[in-house]
Picture 1 (cartoon, rainbow, N blue to C red):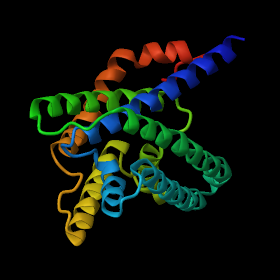
Picture 2 (tube, rainbow, N blue to C red; picture 1 turned 30 degrees about the vertical axis):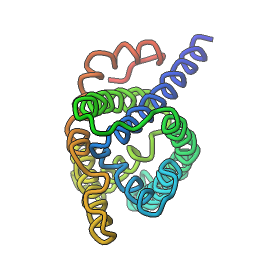
Picture 3 (cartoon, rainbow, N blue to C red; picture 1 turned 135 degrees about the horizontal axis):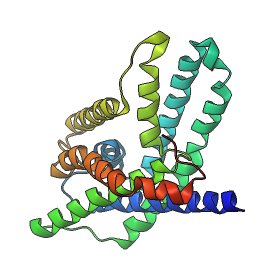
Length: 238
């Protein structure tokens, strides 16, 4: 019974984390100072073609999941000892699809409820800072429960895994996250450049998200991670 209760608590923390993460991302867009790097690509495309932002984010997340499956297949097939786990990881990757659907529905709800902030730089910065804070807290809560990662985090982990092919030391998740953020910003810039919408979705919010979200995660984990694990797990991993 105790294990069952802790599993329920893990799922509550996990879903609450996704909810807070979605709220943070949407507040970032509503501040109109530039969106977070990983969201900048679907944000720019949705505005250029007039498509729903949350639905475009879901499409991009589906693409991320497909790339993860390919990367994990390549990674595990290069190591005979690890090859037996390939099915488990492919299923885990595939489960990110329903997570994407739930997460992007949260985005749609918050988009409908939260008005955009214009022509008030002080209020815009306050909303942006709150967005970065909530994005970091939501990401930390959902990731710490070790259930199913958000595709935006899952693809970074897959990239990190793949850099360790054939015994190579590889690159850490933090380094891969920075590289992937830069890739997304460059992609968004090129989309805007070739469509006549330069810097669409890019701005102070993009830079602050790149720097601030990781710091918020680090501080949140230092203050609360052990307490959350003590409540949500039968044991705490070293």
